[in-house]
Image 1 (spheres, rainbow, N blue to C red):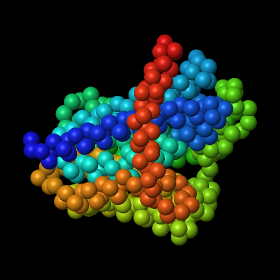
Image 2: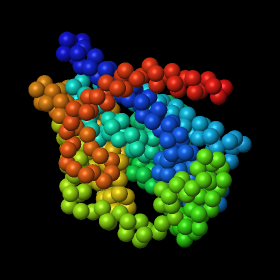
Image 3: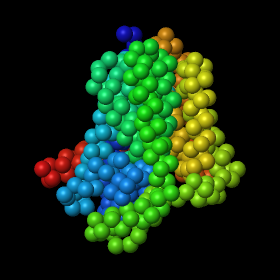
Image 4: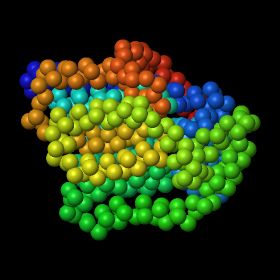
Amino acid sequence: MNLESSRLKAFNSFLFFITLTMYFELFIFFKDLKNIFNGGHRWITADWLINYNFGFVRRGMFGSFFINLPHEYSNILFLIEYVLFFIYLGTLFLFFYVSYQFIGTSTLSIFLLSPVFLKFIFFNQYAGFRKEMLCITTIVLLVAYKKSDRKIFYVLSFLFYVLSVFSSEYGFMLFFPIFFLLLVRNNENVKTNIGFTIMPPLIYLILHIMNSDKYFQKSLELCQSIKKLNPFNYSNYICEGQIHWIGLSSVETINITKSYYDMQYILYYLIMFCVGLIPLVITGWLKKNSIFFTIQSSLLILFFVLATDWGRTLYLFYSIFYVLAITSIDKNININKRLNLFIGGCFLFTNFEYWNPTSFNIFGVNTLQEFINSIFNFNNNFLSILNDIVSKI
């Protein structure tokens, strides 16, 4: 291993370490939402509580595993928090595993520093611990299966694929990447892989069509049910976000979202889209997979119509591509050192808003402070989480 490769390995290892410290910082924020908002945030916490107690409803699978447990509301939230904590932590370590062979490459650095990848949720805390992370877990597990050929990863990736599709519409962004991994780049077990790819979204769509006219009533019933469970929140606050949103028809949803579509909004996220392209272009991945990228982009347009938080949509869109691109890096391709430093430096100071940006101030030294805080708070964050777990045992 030459000196340059050793330096890159040390630098990328440091980036992974910072990612870990920032993850713990983000989890502390997520965990404290139940105290800040008297029982939970109307968008973030409430989304994980949506369930099937009153029949099939959008986004309901994840919450159905927890809502009927014989525990108090605070303990149900505790279980959800720590199940998510270990799912996401496992995803980070698994991502490190599948990308470790490229840790001595300059191209990995660009991906890790990109403001539309993991860094995005660490600088947009209200965009963290959302259901799109289940989709990223699915892709990382499937890539791990392709790398190791261990069936456990194949089974887990299918289970998370089902969980992603039935817990959030973002799960549909997995269809083409899974098709790409299992059917375009693989000629084995074709029938099994076709079933793997098609069945979850197909079954979901059938159930959705059969039940969509009942969503409004079910959202009201879910609201009352969760309010009864929640001894801290006597208002409708917990119901005014995601629970209310699932009861809206497509027309009502579009009428709300289109109010955000002004030129500044579109231009801001067009810039974010272009910035996300940079690592894919300079590594040559986009050129080799342009058809796949174009097809997946059609889903991106659909989600732009149906959602207001375009930043989160772009974060998931590029995270899927980045995981696929990172694990297929050509070690013989090395970015020019000066270009690498320039792009990495720009990315270091770049941050995009996840929703409703008020200006084009995407550059700022405040990003360095976020990194510093996560490192210096890591010990306290780790001990806080450990004490929290031990106190429940």
